[in-house]
Length: 344
Image (cartoon, rainbow, N blue to C red; front, top):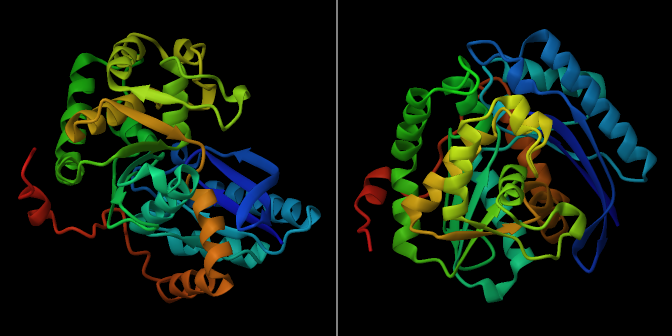
């Protein structure tokens, strides 16, 4: 069985074509189109005509590529940059009308749940009670669980690109005052979720996402060319030193560092601060890096639960198409209850 998934994120549109063997999605082809949608949004978050046109063209190319590789209509989704856009409904309509692809917007909580599923499948049951952190361009997902799906999942407006635009858009490199302001916001937003993680005492703590992978490489983890099965760890003490290093460099200088790609050089400092703060407030000294994340979670859920599961997502998107509800912060734990969780 051949399947494909299209991920429209803050920086790129990515396609993965995979074969299912014993319920495991094995990639046979990948492709990406760099759009940097988050840099094209207006002050009000709208994507506008130009960015929408680029997104339409990229999704169209992805669908044609998937077809050439023998995959049916891709499972297509967009993350926070589209989810939070005031003109989200218009963007999704344009994609559907011109490509025949149903581009869906997943609530932040669902993103966290699906990424957790991917991490659980990769790490296996021996990982035990598991905590997950996933830094995207527009949001940060945090989850915890003991089984296949998480018991706690939250999405917070703490994406690396989002905070870069908010705090680091004036000077290069940013000032100490700007860095401190970003730290304060991250600490405040993470207070409840990290209290829950501390209370749960996870046996294994995992980082997923390209941001964490690049930060781990910067801090000495093996390079990607060593393959996905090489163990990679990100240590909090190393990340703290990396923050000081990144803070003193311009964007161009950061892009020359190990692991830091040019498209992510601008946002890597914010990503490092988010990651370090999450680890510190959660009481974690290290995170294991998982190569599977949201795209693999969608493929796994599709393979395990069938087309009807994805059809439910598509129908829900159609029902809310004209409302463009902002689902950035969704949590299965009431905030007042999270604040009451005792610190070990």
